[in-house]
Every structure is written in structure tokens, then in C-alpha cells.
Image (cartoon, rainbow, N blue to C red):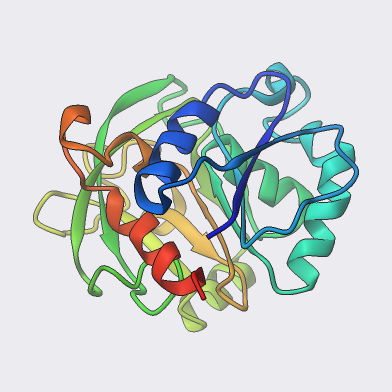
Length: 233
């Protein structure tokens, strides 16, 4: 699987993502600079976490207009696979590649903690190594992770099975009003969503930070194993 990781000014999670991708593919991903105007031949583009452009204006708003995003839009239009994590998810919503928006956390505080996610759709390139209803632990670290969408968008996401992950209690219980299990207050406890063709996934927590026992566990590794299974030909 040929993967590329996009780096913007302020990105700070590209090394974590590179470690995770190399762990499952055996080869280092390509590091792509935001001013690049061409993409190499890739199976997967990753927009990692961080604070692109210092989160000025809005999280991801300035990065959405970087030169490389024109190429990433074209890559998406051709059916390419894209993963956006944390700031990457914010950038995907700002570009319109995914619907909705990420606002300030409900408590107006930056959160850095473990959370639990329940797998809502196991039939995608990002989730096929899980079963629907599986729960896994993963870190989160963000100040603007409160997912919102208008009622029509929410209805479409639910009806088209495009919610990939929801925040949950360790036993899998989902309660959007419970700040312990849904710490940022996201609408419908949504932690990750999919594009209409399921080839683009955006999520706020960081599965790349749990891919090795030395990191404290391998809870996030199935996401990357899923991508290898789906994309290696």
C-alpha cells in the first residue's frame, strides 16, 4: 500500500502516523508538503493531526486552501482513499470533502485523554477488521472536536450508514448527553464519518497512537490493517 502524509505548517502528528503506517505496510509513507502541486502514485492520502496554520481563522480553514488540496480533491474525485484524523478531519470538512463542522468542545476546554469508540459500520476500507458494535480505546487530543451538522445532513449520515464511529462507554453504551463517554459533546456522539462512497474517512481521536504494545496497546491497529487489506492489490 502506497501512502502519503500531508504536512502543513503546524502539523505535529505526521511522525505518529508514519510509525503506524510503516508498522502495517513495512515501508515508510511519503511525506507530502502542503505546497506540492502534484501527488505521486498513491493508494492512500492521510491528513494528520496538529494545528495547521496555528488554527487561525478556524481549524483547518486555511489549510483547505493550500495548493496540495487541489490535487487531493482530484484524487478523491478519481475514487482515491483519504483518511483525516483530528485536524485532518477538520480540513476535510472545510474543503467540503466531508459534511458538517467541528466546533469548540462542549466544555470549552482542550481535552487530552483516552476515550472509547464503537464501530458503527464494519463494511468499509477503514473498519473491515472490526465487527459492527466492537469497542476500542483510543486517545483524543483536541479543543475543537464537537461535531455538528444540520438535521438533513445528520439524517443522511444515519440513513446511509455513513457514521463510522461513535463515542461510547467501555461497554459500548452510547449516550450523546453523557460527557464522560461523549467528552466533546458531539452531535449524536459522532466521532468519525464517511463519504458517500466510503473512501474518505474523518475522525477526531488518534488510532495511530495505539498500534504497538510499547505504546500501551494495539487498539487502533485494526484501522490500518483494514486499509492494507482493502488497498493492497
